[in-house]
Length: 215
Ligand code: GRF
Image 1 (cartoon, rainbow, N blue to C red):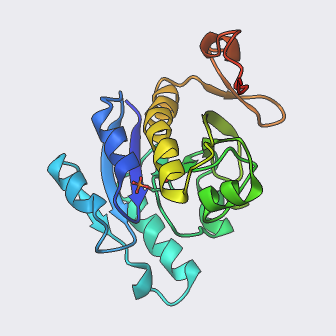
Image 2 (tube, protein in one colour):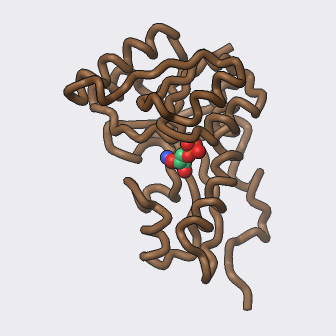
Image 3 (cartoon, protein in one colour):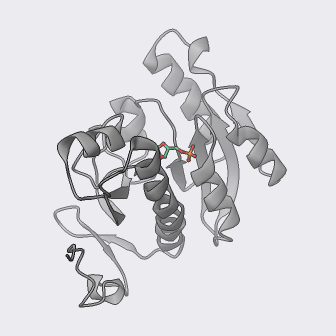
């Protein structure tokens, strides 16, 4: 069975969705860069070993990433799963684990990389928003897309309401993406586009399910 280490910085609701999903994966550890991350207690309750690599204890990004890599490598995971991990990783760190770092980002990438994605979506006036699970490359919030989920942006949405609607979908698509990785079904075309063995888009998008508003 493949194994993962999950990295968090905060409440860890995506981490919890992954822990609760019964995936065919060994979840070797949860590592936080913040000692006060709420998700640490949740992981411990689930019986998953936890540790903290405090970014504040390291003078540079390189030093932090080296300490983080050392902690991760002690568990020898197949995949490193970023679940609300709010540190930008150095190019050296990312290149150490090619196609082995997975991230969830709360937008339909390539739209709205970076922070405050729901605010950006509202300010831009997009009518469809969502979330993306992708493999990590040295470019922030970029890399081969494994799965996305779309939600409508409603007229009276604020950031909180929109974030909650997206988060509900995050909790579905992150476990699904990890299940495909666990099953060894994530393949890459020559252009680094992800294909899932045994799935094509029409398998999960019914012909009539176009996201078009009606009067
Ligand atoms: C999620 O919206 C995730 O996509 C983003 O930060 C949030 C983390 O939430 N990167 P949680 O810690 O998983 O609850």
